[in-house]
Image (tube, rainbow, N blue to C red):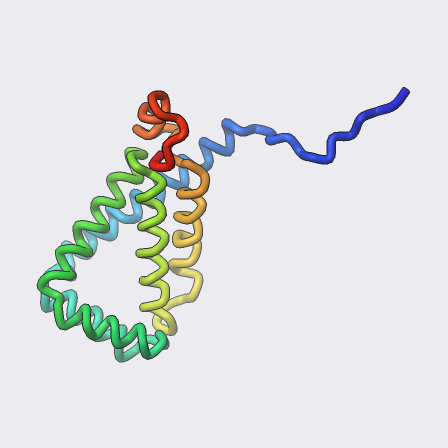
Length: 164
């Protein structure tokens, strides 16, 4: 009697993995909503508050010189950029929590958190933003909105769409 050994492992507990991704998605979404309200309460979305935070990172961080140049440009346009950051943070939070357009929202979250990670180099613990940054990339790859999200409803009509 011969036994066939399958060298390709089967996915075990696929539904549990999807639930795990959904939990991470909701958690990162809640993080964005929390930070939005925290920054709003601190006045960080006012032109002066925003410029103050950015100027602090320009002086104190170990970011590359080209990044500090970019931060100085942003700081000089704080009246426009501050509300854009506020809108980005609350929008990403809500989209991730409800699981709508999760893949593009998670990709934007990955880029946004990655930019914050570079901005804060040397001013905070290096691992402070890195887990959320990389988890956001995992959410984009893993189609995390298809469990407990609006994307699941949209996928019924168009399951091959790259948006969900």
